[in-house]
Length: 166
Image (cartoon, rainbow, N blue to C red; front, side, top):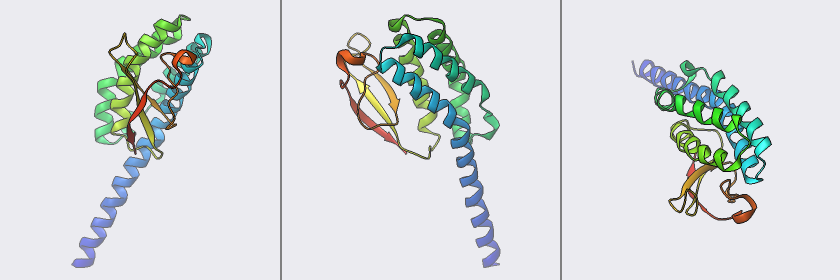
C-alpha cells in the first residue's frame, strides 16, 4: 500500500512538472519577441520596434492556452486582449513615443503572465521612476543590467531591478 501511495505521489509530481514545462515552451516565443521589441525601443529604433511588435503578435496568436498551467492560463486569458491590442498599436506606428506608451501597458500585462509561468531562466522586472511623466513604468528583461526602453540613450541606465522572476 505504501509503494502504491509513493507511486501516485511521484506520478503527480511528474505531471505538475510536465505542465510547467509546457507553459515554459508555449510562452517562451512570446517572451523572446517581447524582449526583442524592448531591445528595439532601447535603441530608439521605431522601424525595428514595429517589426518586432509584428513578430510578437504572431507569437501571441500561436499560444495554445490549453498547454498552459491553470494559473498561467488564467493570467493569459485576462491579458490576451490587451497584449494583442498593444502589440498591434506598436506595429502600426513608427512614432517612438507612441510605441513606448503602449509598451508600458504591454509590459504590465506581460508581467502578469510571466510572473505565474515559471520560466526556465530568470526574468528581471525592472523599473524607471522617470518614465510615464514621472509616474514610473516597468519592463521585463533577460539581463540584470538596466537598459531603459523608455528613454534609450538619453537615460540608458535609468532604473533598477525590482524583482527577479524564476
